[in-house]
Length: 190
Length: 438
Image (cartoon, rainbow over all chains, first blue to last red; front, side, top):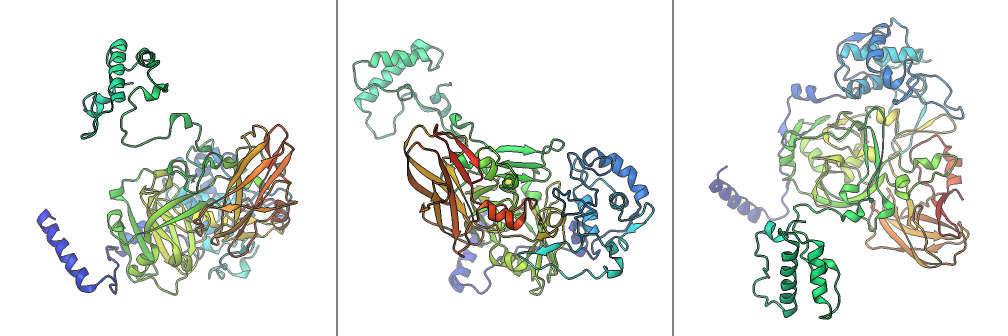
């Protein structure tokens, strides 16, 4: 916009203000640009407990072991016992005097595991694992917790069906907990 | 030190125009010129200053060296005095990932309710991203009529709102859960809390523009850091008083506090105040992110864990005197501290100097703002005998800050987050101060 045009726009704005008064009916500027579905899909990282947001791809714990050893073990320990990173494996009771809070005994949703690895891990190179690798290493962490078998295939269909041992271990304080996701069924209970 | 006049381009004896120079000042310049000649090379050396002072002997009141030589030149961005170099954040980071950790505000060295931006606490999950402001955008999508993106330049054109608000990490003060009272400076245990003036766009405006479905009761927020940190927030709060902040304490938000855009969630736990905000998704349910399930939940003795513990309950803390400070003999001291509540205004702060047997109402510094630090002060004559200092905040809802024993009895010691018990400092007869459970 040239300076002359800018001045012109300023005069026009003054006239609008003078005409409409201070209390305009809709004073918000509406400066957002429409985002296409494709653009949203590229931005959107959310994965919900019912599986919405999970990408194509698949992996097993057997495949994930190598991914884990290469990218995870140095911080989380060879068997998920923890180190500079959190303890991942263990099924000790949460009522123990000094309990470890692990994926196996604490995390309520398996989808969260996939989501967190995809968005944030490994910390020295986030978002460098393929979706297949994320499925596989998620399976391996669940395997270390005796939640899936070594050759169980995890994908967008099977991952949300895993019922985590501590699924019902939470109490909503300042907001109600949501109803059961539609994929989880009592038959999956631990 | 360089001769200041060379940097400013003013003549060496310039005075404000129109102000006749008093005789004393002319004499001073003459002394300084002689001093410069003695020290040579345009530098105001010690010899020059000493010569000037020697020349002044007998001509008037003695003046310290900094009154007999021109001061430092202007600066484009001011810094604290070099003598205050120890007033800094205390950092504790992951040994393997330097950007995963926290830094604490030195509350024990500060007064007033505004935390200097450079001392605002940090909690980063994977470092501070360096974001080009002209390449950063906010996406609003999900259960909306039309998904929209906003440039930072366009957001700056929206109607703005400023509020003075504390932000407190849900993990603040968590050393209080330990069996033994930890010995450290007050701010280095309780300083994952800071208070700033935040200026930004009311979130409700943008949700309306996007046409957010009124029946969708959650909002997912995500940051543009290397952790792509993500949380879920009830829509009622998002629409109620949340801000998309562009400015902190008058200037653009510092990188470590979310530059160029931070979600501000007044009074709620720090992790919800997403830094480097890139995405808001209107949703029908929480996304159940790692940082609202595996972390930022509080395991109770029953084996169940508290989830969505959003509100930061009332807390207070005596910042002076506090551990690491020293009482220099009996006599008058002002007990000073901070109180805040995520539920609104602080109604009162009581202070005890005998471990809780007797309490006195402290004076609150006006204005007392909702969800902001409030300064409290109480004069105290220290007899020189051992004393146990406590402060106890009550907020406008009537909620009273609990004693530690009551909090631990209710929650156990493994909740990690949301520790807000009364803090006790023991003063011994030598004036040394330590942290105790009492």
